[in-house]
Length: 288
Picture 1 (cartoon, rainbow, N blue to C red):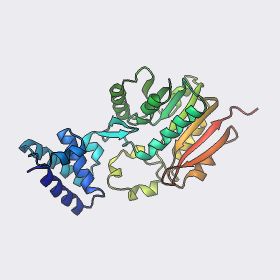
Picture 2 (spheres, helix red, strand yellow):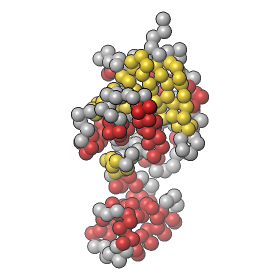
Picture 3 (cartoon, rainbow, N blue to C red):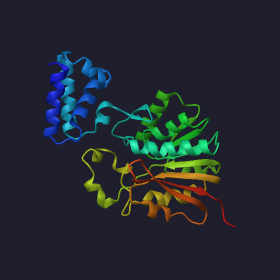
Picture 4 (cartoon, rainbow, N blue to C red):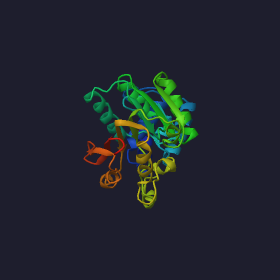
């Protein structure tokens, strides 16, 4: 069987099982297996697959039909034009989170902020921490995650992108270890924390349900982690430092209400789809 025939059969099968992007999924899985760009599948339509290639591809197709995310099957995901290793132990980096990174990059450029000290809470694959180190001049970033598995994956990505001199990945619970070490010179705290309400977990897509629940669920109101992070951030940020959160659509008013008198310039930004996406605020320091 050649590439053209195999893609056609897989597209039809994925349609029958109800996948949202059957042709794309078929192409991505095959291109990855054959170690070629997707465009080259069309250039090589007549390429006959070996028996081993067919067996490996069919296994991937079976797994995808079970709603295993494509990124877990290929073991990688692109983010900010960089490739990151992923596995079922970490949340898959999403395009909407690129908007969060872009906002921070623009903020640093607009304010001439160099040598910034940045902490990424819940770093997962390390995509945000590593991307910021790459795009913000001389930034020093720390990615922290409570999951040892996530730390393992993030360190693998750090090795891949050769940014060890300016990025550290540590195992820890939110900002606790920074507070214990009396660190209070941080310029930026960034987090894409869990923000799904408990009642909404059952309505998530089958693919999202394959991702770590701990990276998604955030209590009855979806605000558990914002409530924890904001007061901790007050002990770690320098005066004039900023915090940037990714939020779920419709959460802006609730998250903004969590900032007290020590904060100013609270702001909500919508993403390119018009959805509430980013909350940012400036830490004013201790009020006298």
